[in-house]
Image (tube, rainbow, N blue to C red; front, side, top):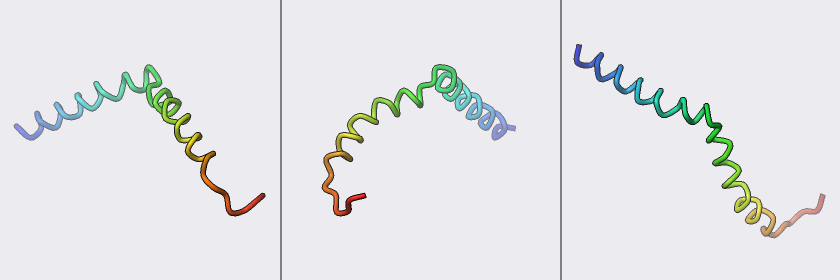
Length: 51
């Protein structure tokens, strides 16, 4: 019985964290923050082949 209570608590905590992430679209906002530095790094890399 104690294991079931722990499992339910973990599931509710997971739900409490993931619902706001989904609701406020925070994953996309995080990717937008990371995209600029990543593109700057990618654009500055030397290229061996020309397309």
